[in-house]
Length: 276
Image (tube, rainbow, N blue to C red; front, side):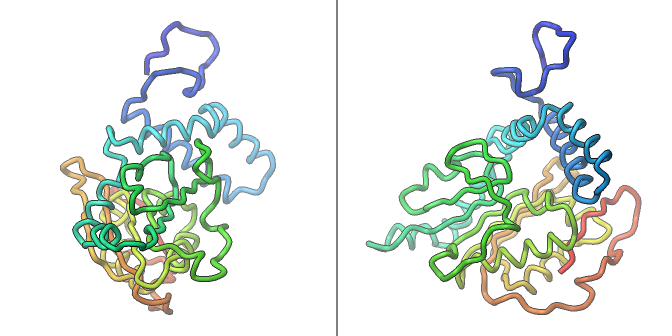
């Protein structure tokens, strides 16, 4: 990224106006933040925590992370997955059903990890969105941790659809990721839709999680697969998409689903894992 005039003092990323980050730089920044935030979850020593906070500040603080994440999700980078979600809802006849039913309430959608406030602006006639993220960068986006979100008190608190795009892979631990999946079910009405997006390597290049194991977990927590699109990383497509429907309440799964087991062996594999 061009910084213009050279300064002796390091300039935070967010301090440069009207400058864009390269795709490589954006990915590097986000990965660095994820590593540091993951460390914070496991470290209790005050001195070590202080060192991590200093490292975060050197990167430009959480505002820099938000800036990089927003760029990463921009449609020009292919990061806006909402167009896939809407296309699938259209193919399944859901959009037609809502638009064709006079007097029907709009589809209540919860978008988790919303970095952009207007992803569904063109669908306002039939979609009513609630947007949440850990760090809000817009008044419309509520600052909230989905794992800490108050449980629904009644059916009115549940949603017709939930979008979780590139969020589950940021949850720090395998157990919390499993809890995240269960909570997705909890916040959906019966027959509600779940749109899930992950980096493809999470299920194609992990020692502990395969595509089949992931779908088994989703089925165990009450979801039925409707649509699937897994990018071929060898061809530069690194995103995996799923459309699922809530067809049951979470069930007790096989004991293996709660144990960290090697499912794929080989070099250059990642350690992404989910336990339920």
